[in-house]
Length: 306
Image 1 (cartoon, one colour):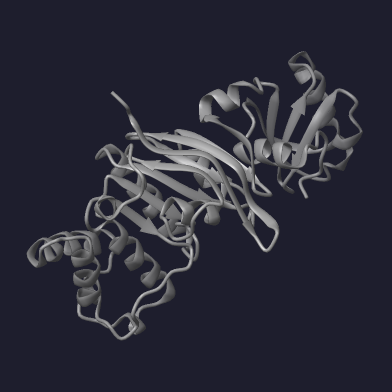
Image 2: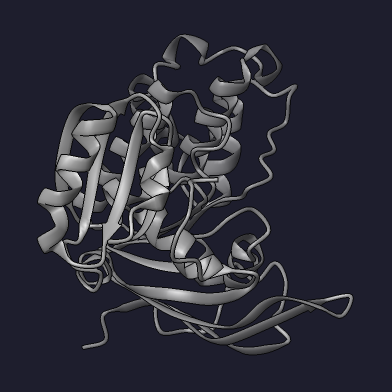
């Protein structure tokens, strides 16, 4: 039995002679969360627009639930575009009815499901308010509600954390995990590696239109081995760049991620760190997703965190 919900094979898309997506392939299986990762301008949104049949690939193939994109499939997909848009003169209640009916729902079901989601997002008090009366963050949350109101089988989210404050980012993250538990298959694009790392099962990393890395997250991390040390510190950590036994590092000011050539040098590193800075923590770990992406996208080995 085919477990694939989404298959992209050798997708190519050019705009004005510039290649935006360059032979990208990926597979998303039922019940998984896949993170489509990369910086702004990497080609993530172009790939998603091709998945949704908004633009056609110049070459390559897309299958959703084993089929070519068609009108019948649309009701089984939830899509949150990067460029948000709601009708500002509409009330929240009218907006829910509008988007729910687009997906073939009945009015009573829309009202029930809509009120459940509004309550979850702390928006129920705005049920009869116009969109123009909502803050930007509230409107963002409402847009997410309209995307999932019909309980889709496949959810495609383009930068779902964009414009949200930390509290609402956590709310969206928890919602994504809850929908996974309900059996919904999810693909979301983001350039925020820290959030992706907490929730994805597998990843596809894109840089300048090309796929630079993909796979199950745990497998991707294990390839690098536990040769990484994460520290929290106070002081000037610039001296780390001169240590001959390290392969690379990322310095974030109060935190640093250091890759050793050989894990046997961890004690030597600890001794050198203690002699130069005030150390709050020293932890052996796998590399962060952010570190993995920077290494693959830029090909660098030693760095300063810039």
